[in-house]
Amino acid sequence: MTIQDFLKNLCERTGWKLSQAESGDVCMTIPLKDGRIQKVFVTEFTEEGASMARVRSIIGPVSSLIGDRALMALKMNATLRYGAFAIDKDNLILADTHLLDSFNPEQKVQSILYVAEQADRFERLLFKEDRH
Image (cartoon, rainbow, N blue to C red; front, side):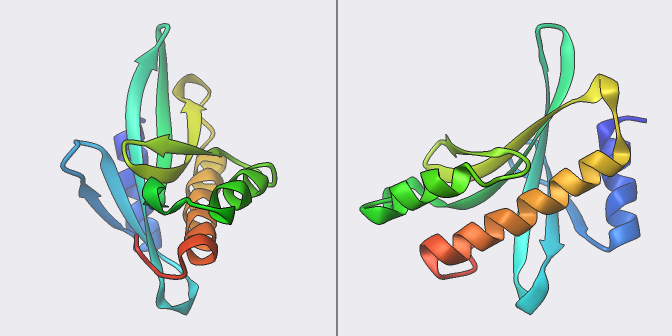
């Protein structure tokens, strides 16, 4: 099963909206509590001959990480079960990377949902709005 097939099946089972981003990445729009949503992107790539997938969600613009927000983000980074904060273009993101050769469907679902929930949580803490 390819990662695209897995994500399509996952979205059909969960009711998440599946689309393709302008970048070509798979995009899942995941509804969360309190009527909030979070978009999670999956990029497949190869590194050193190994097939991998990066799961990421945008938290907010890096330009907004001024003062205590940057320090708060780094402190929160140490509490994450999956993934880590990173900067992608002009955005603070939460990203997790998976080796596809050792495909564990349950672990992938947990990672995707965790990235969505935590990105939304940090978006709310750092920026006080539902941006993504």
